[in-house]
Every structure is written in structure tokens, then in C-alpha cells.
Image 1 (tube, helix red, strand yellow):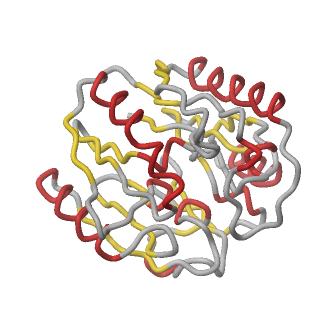
Image 2: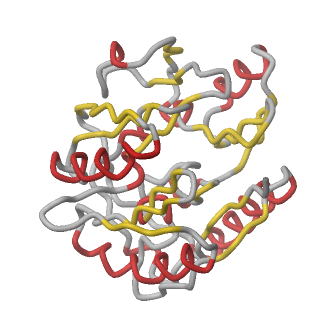
Length: 251
């Protein structure tokens, strides 16, 4: 089975991206482009074929492509972002997933859903209920994924942008979680982390796990557990509350 990663080039207006839970700081767009290229290189060097969605230069947050679509098997669920300014990002992503030969469905008003709130682990799909994803969006996603044998579990969010800003899963099915942001009891086999960026990982296949350079202690811990950390520097995207999961959609 071909492993494909969908990405999108950073907008020249990246520095205007939305910040919600952190203070705004200057973004070096040239450095961000170089970091994005290195991120894509990490995917390709670990066996992923990378496809680019059409650029959306008028959409500052468009590089965070994860929020625009949820892919489950052969179904691409186009989202309806809770941040209205991000909704123009969707048509270009719709074109990209159509070109990949996927079936498509879309979250409809009044539902809102962003892919950063959707964590798929086996046949369970955890969905964060917070500022960007509402109950109607979760209901619609549950209905769309039920025929694929998926169980959707809603997770109330604390003071955090997205579910995957607080918890992601390792290849062994354990969860890296930053305490205090989500109810830990909803997840089996939790591994608490201390570094904010330590709870964001992207499994790349086998024992390889992508993690940000800003979480060195967590990367060391993962190595001690028999995983192979693939470390990428995404400092400019972190200034916009981005993390390693946000910059691609893998299938």
C-alpha cells in the first residue's frame, strides 16, 4: 500500500496566522519555508510519497493542512473550521483529495470540525470538543465514520487549541499527554510528558516517530523506550500554535 502525505506550502502571509492561547511573536517566513522543506524531507526519507495541495497564499494558516480534512480509509471528510477565516482553505484541499482518488464528504453547517481535534488510533477516533469543533461536527463525523467501523469518542478540551495540542499516540498504542488539558481517564495507557511539544508526535512507520526539536527530553525518553525519534525544527510554526501533526495529513 502506498503511503501518502498531503502537505501545503506556507503562505507569504504566514505571520498573520491566528494565535489564540499564546502571545504573538514575529515569524520569519523564509525560515518557516526552509523548516517546511526539511519537514517534507523527513517524510520522504521515511518512505512517504508527498503530494502538495494547491497553494493558498491568501490564507495565512493554510500550511496547517491537517485542520482541513480528516482521512479515514478511502474517505476524505472535508472539515468546516470553527475559525471562519480558515474556511476558504477547504476548496483547494477538496481538489487535492479528489485527485488522490478518495471519496469525499463534508461537515455541514451548523457543524464545525477541525482536523487538529481528530486523533485516530486503530478503530477508535478521539475528537476534541472545544473552541474549533462543536457537538454537531462530532455528530456528523460519527455518522460518516460509523460505516467504516470506527467508534468516535468525544473529549472535552481545557485551555488548549486542539485535541492533538494536548495528546497524540505512539505506535504501540500508548498516549503522550500533557496533564491538565484533557481528561486523561478517557485514554488507555497514558504516558504523561512535561514538555509542551512532547505530547505531539507523528508515527512514520515501524518504530520511527516524528517529534519537534523543542522537546529534547521527550525525544530522549522515546529513544529509551525503543522508538527512533525523527527530530524536526518547526520553531516558526510553533509561534502560531502549530505542531508536527498540523503540517501534513498522512494515509
